[in-house]
Image (cartoon, rainbow, N blue to C red; front, side):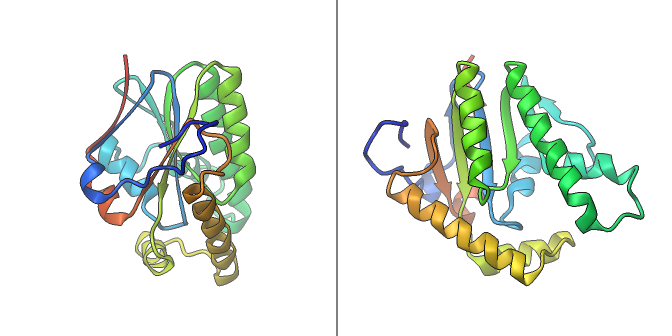
Length: 205
């Protein structure tokens, strides 16, 4: 891991080192990865979510925010609307919920698209304004693995969109390994095995 001003590359955690991650109180932890990389699956497992929640969950004082919650909320009102047309509303609601939890001074663990760097910059800026830090957990899986994850969940993005995500994700990972990622207090990169080994994300009292 590294802080904003440390010139050393970010640490990449291997499978055996990923049993538990700890962060300062009131931190914002964003879990990012390609569509289908396993972000929602990780949050469901760690926080025992059901998957049908329509609002952020609270577990041990932590606000757990998955975009699936916003998707489920809007599904009640936009049933006949095509998925592509719902996407802007879902993402806007999801981002707003993360912002609201951050502004409320809560510890936050949230799923986000790491391929949208402006989102990372925005949350990092907002966290600093609130006197806390942004931390990133990057789930770095092969595109084929992510594609299989999309199929298994029943939501497959178009080939063009996925290719764009892959290009942006590779840039993000390359910048991570050279220590030039958008501002974050720490960055942890996990492969699929390491993510499966992760037992918990904890915050100091």
